[in-house]
Length: 435
Ligand code: FAD
Image (cartoon, rainbow, N blue to C red; front, side, top):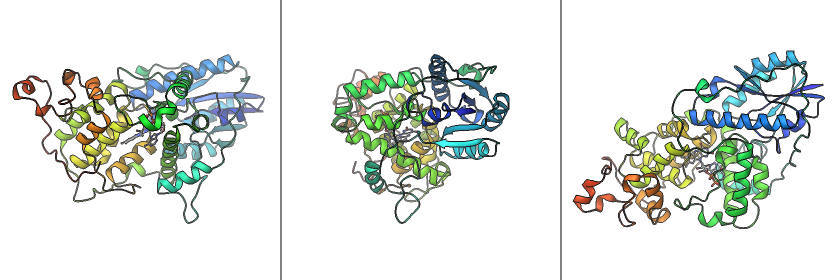
């Protein structure tokens, strides 16, 4: 028998249930299909290609290979199954709108298709409330998630036996696939890099998570989000390794990820939904939106976050909250503008997590405290007390001391006008604050 293993968001050989199942056949064809629909954001394309190169190396080390094709996944699987004489297809069960359409198209083929867990700790739909189809509020979800049984980890295949005569196909460069700038200071893609980061983080920092994860300058979160997004690291393995110590908060974050994925599975149109602001209508202010995107609003904590995003393709969670709140609550701009900009730069950019979090901040989604507004200056005082985060990303403020770095407008006029930094954006107001 011959099985095709279609990699999607599970670019790893460790704890990969779909790969383990496919390798039980006599022959296996590991495949990734580069579909134009997923090749839109330079930062993610770079990370993807590095992850595929790493995966190919691991599969070659096990005697196999990674076949790479371009085009429509169902069409490429159909072609390859004829070439290889395959009778079965295994893939990870991935419930984005795109993943759901892809799975439906694959099920039309003349192959036995099996979708396996592995993209989240607990699969979407596995936990359901007594009176409904899915959880809409996080806390009850977290309670059942925390206690839910976990599947056993899948064994890493010892040998990957390919059918004879298949062409592996070239791995294109990023420039061949997508045009546009990448962030200059990104994280490297791939399972090897992801596992190295996971091990170092579990060893050195995980126990401090509950105490330190909101400290912007310390930068002590795991930074595993892009590895989770592409499945270079197993969320299940990470969750198991994160029990005990000061790690409860970290497991909660993994549960948030699962939560957003099960919401998105239930509402595939999530990111497009036209939620109204809580009062009135959204402002259409192109200048304010451009200043927010560029990190030139004149509010240092906001600008530092936005510059980190461009420089690294990543932003600290606390800064994501502050910048998103600033856009939607202070500038009163539509959260979908923010979502689009984050999506265009984040290496971990993911419809479920991005839309779920934007709606939470904008107070339009499943938020149980929709009135919360974050005062950026108070956030700065709490989470970047000494100002090191701002100084790291805003070189024009690098010389300012802790008293002035978060509000340079309080400097004497001569010092202030010598700075190459704008005054606070007009239209910035501080509404009722409780953050
Ligand atoms: P850690 O603090 O180390 O957390 C561990 C893991 O838990 C993360 O890697 C991530 O997979 C998961 N996680 C943590 N917080 C959240 C959360 N609030 N929601 C969902 N999963 C979470 N995360 C994304 O992965 N993709 C996105 O597109 C994304 N967009 C966001 C947009 C906004 C407006 C906000 C406020 C948050 C967004 N997040 C997104 C969630 C969160 O900011 C990032 O997951 C986190 O900053 C990644 O850094 P880390 O890996 O060091 O996180």
